[in-house]
Image (cartoon, rainbow, N blue to C red):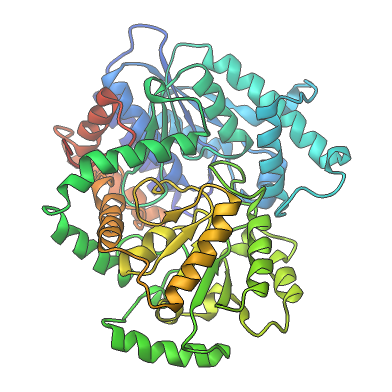
Length: 525
């Protein structure tokens, strides 16, 4: 982990945490362990994992085993300030009795690569992410960097398999993708070990996959998509009337960018000030004029993804995110019934070293009914006034836009895809057909978003930002930063707030004993 923190403040935090957890955790009576990863360099990520793991240990006494370490390519691409020594100190303050430097062990092994389907899938996705390329390059299998990645994945898989043979109560992880996280998840699923997936937003948010409910028919994320949909349908949607005022308030806060910032952008440009159709129509004319579009023809907005991000981890209709984007642009070039704007992801520089978006834009240069723009060149006001139909694979726009009456087509699954917010198509043929039908319907004046979809989308915003966000002094809100502020806040909680009825422990116990797929702020049933 990297820390720009005062050394004394950090040590006071460690001392307070060590005393707190020593006094609040029962001693294990057997060899049970809770395994928690600490591969991320942001301490806020790892603190969420450790807090959740300790809440489990209050229910099922067990030792704490922490996985950490950093590999050269991960350091080069992302973790420039990773410090295993800092991780070890924090882990031990939270009661860890064993801290395993996974990458140190992997580097010292000489196991050759194996062509296991799971190992290869995570090798491919991790290679693309660390190389920041949208697709595997030509002749990638003979490249030395790919062969090393493949060997590393094989060794990680073997190490995790050996670890999961122990008496493991749970695996707690911040990510479920790429080699160092994803292969741990795969081996835990095979060993029928509960998996807790914490989130990097809000206070404490987490999903859970329990072996009793794991059909093993899809990826971890695909399993969650189905289970989240079941919870939404059975426990949230029936309460829509009593939750309506709360959902409307959350929808307003989301519109003005309070609470969790938009994944697409933050700051003033993420706020929406449009209050009625007349305001939208006035701004729309101005924006389409800027783009050289006709205000009377439908506008389809296609939201590009971070093109190397977590490839293949949920159900997707195209071989890659790049294939989907390029093929959609080619389709749009031939379909003049609509005008199309293609927006790049605002963080694309962190995911793409090939200028993929620019290459697609260049291919269609001069096509008047197509426009390619970086995300930041359009404010959210402009974007919402312009868009008649949104298109994405799994982006958060597919839950945000429907909440305000804008239809979205998804060419893949996201965690909310079973909640009835957007149009989720099942294959490529259905994708092209749905695009055709939607554009024709908009041109004819048909409203593609039902009132029920709007209410479902706003309920999802409430569920994501409120219903599944547990507020506890033991895990400060994500925006409590920089590090010195975070440590002072947590030290106050450890030293001055009693643990009785702390929401962390009550919420985790409810999720754990009922084997629910989501941590919840209140008891839904």
